Length: 359
Image (cartoon, rainbow, N blue to C red):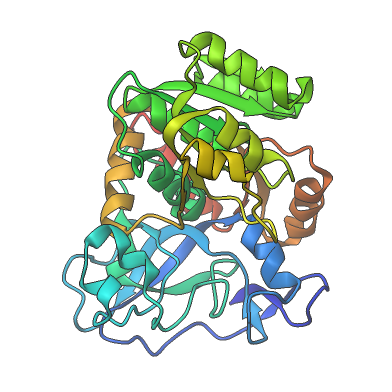
């Protein structure tokens, strides 16, 4: 099969022929990849900062159709449409695996991470773990599901982690990015009031399109952003904020727009996260780090996507031959939403002929 692999750090992917995975463990699934999505982590893998053993097939966000199943797989059959999780073979024995279920994604003893430490979805076929996969609702398309496998699952957990009630205010700093524009839609689907904060024209446009109640241009400056938030929150600030921006002052802004004793969920991954001590101590801002959703939460996310028509703004490229074009767009800072590679046009065609009103 054809695959795009990192074979040398800080160099372009090598697109070449590799063997189709044949030896399935009892709980493995082999999928025919329909869509593979590009994520920020893929650049970290390419640059050699994720402990990756080379060669490694890229992409940890994928969707496709089940082509074969391991001997112990009971919940999936050949032909099922699936979204795959990133973890491969969680140990099932550690404290995180034993529960609560919403923390099972933190298993530190797994067999690897697809597209990061073991082969991912920039290939015709991918071997995944059945325990980490989710069946796709009929209305959810492959092009929507692939970015949701990581970006969607990640920001979904950020939205549900503060346990806000309907009508409460949630701010998203970096609201127009690949994660942020999904977070806006998830929050609205759950009945929250949303303030979107972004510093790019493309991001502000996508924030508005996602349905944010208030949209603020971060380029007006930190103090004015805080003032704008207080104008609509009875001078208190929002109940919780999600930070998905790598900007150096993004965390300070996230804390400042959050009300006293409120929660900031940090999801962006700069080298250092700087929290002003006044926010942490004087205002008792509670900072939570969050990774991605558990498989159960991911399934619930897909149900919300289907019910509320949550849309992923995608930039689609056809085949691995256009991968470097996608990477160039992503690195330009001009990309709106998520970048995807259509790996199998035939699956996309069949999906469009299914008769379902797809999202």
